[in-house]
Image 1 (cartoon, protein in one colour):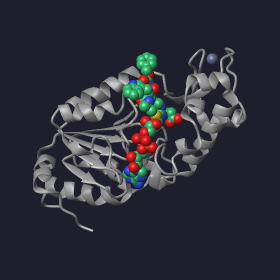
Image 2: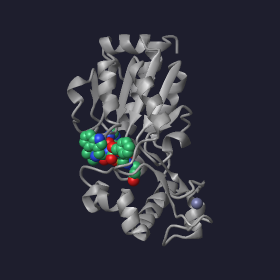
Image 3: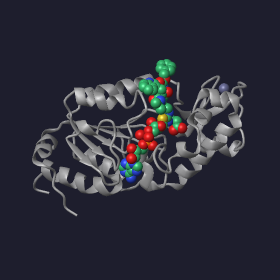
Length: 253
Ligand code: BV8
Ligand code: ZN
């Protein structure tokens, strides 16, 4: 299906040098992974404060560890979908492109995206909450699936994700802000824009005067700012739009 971008957006895409793709759980929905909010979202069945906070881990480490082991297994069974693959393809279309994701599933990397900033960490790794020693999550779960493995220092291993109430990795967030402040084109894909400080990047891109494109079946608090809104699922919307971007950047192809 060949689609064309509207004239004003085509001009911005044609002249864009620096691009940021900002993604959330919706980009992995078509890979069979749950989103958090909305119908069928994780938070409909579970309470984030009981599972994704340092307090929850202190109160019931087994419950939190088993929940992340369950999510880890689902991530291993999942594969990148056409949305992830289209984002990876954009690296051949634009000279400078950074993928800034809130997702901890690693699917952008598995799809081939090389310049990736994982704002909320990754579920594929674990670290000791006392000495910081890092290890592979699969290996840690293999050692102990029911409870977080104990480290040689006496600490406990936890998933290398950013929990609510915890700071984002400083360097990663700083790089995400810098890339957003200087970008010409900002694609917001599959995020409800409700979790901070990550959602603040959409505001930053707006203030920076970037061309804003949102891919989300549902409206978000930022939809009114968008130059282009695509309301079909990302796996359907993105491939054709990336082709259109390729065409308007290198007309011969
Ligand atoms: C912190 C890792 C302080 C763990 C995650 C300002 C205002 C209000 C609140 C706050 C604020 N500042 C801070 C807060 C508190 C809090 C916060 O934002 N709370 C919210 C809920 C109100 N933020 C924090 O706690 C942050 N830390 O502030 O620390 C501090 C500072 C210095 C020093 C010490 C401490 C940390 C936040 C990070 C938490 N960790 N994940 C894990 O995964 O288990 S957040 C987690 O939820 C995800 O990573 C993601 O970020 C978020 C979910 O959002 P989305 O990805 O957008 O997913 P969602 O389900 O909401 O939406 C999916 C969308 O996709 C929908 O719109 C849907 O329509 C769409 N969709 C569905 N299908 C498709 C689709 N789109 C396209 N295609 C489809 N097929
Ligand atoms: Zn340790």
